[in-house]
Amino acid sequence: MNYKIIAAFDNFMLANMTLGLLQENNIDCHLKDEHIVTIDPLLSPAVGGIKLMVEESEFEAAQFFMKEAEEDYLKEIPCPNCKSPSLVIEEKIDKPTNFWGKLKNQIAYGQTETYSKKYRCENCKTLLSELPASF
Image (cartoon, rainbow, N blue to C red; front, side, top):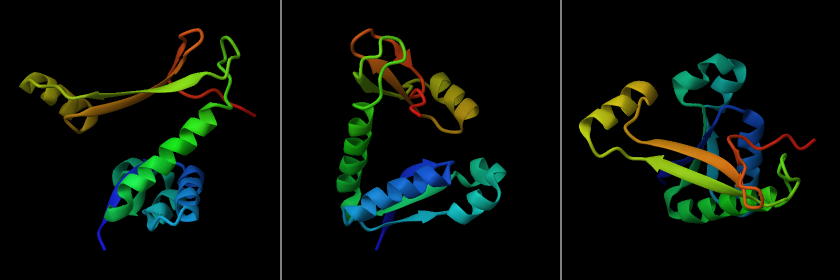
């Protein structure tokens, strides 16, 4: 069996919640490096965080369940600005085409491509870098 990384976490609680979601939907998966990061959180950047590994043949199904769960969760979170529960995900992958752009990303982030995820309220167009606390 070949496993593929579907997500990396620096928080063992979120990693285990996501693992439980996938296992509940009969996806063959496990966590890698959980013990290292849990015992010494300062090592998280060195090992790449807690990695959620999924069987390659079930990768697309796992992505579907994770995306669906996040979208369902977003429906419950109100915008901190207008209080409307209409947040959507905005994902951006920066793939520079020239040498200098790739070099800048490699030096700054350790990889040539960068990924960013933000949340936008469809009602008032407020852009959030993190979800507001909902407790």
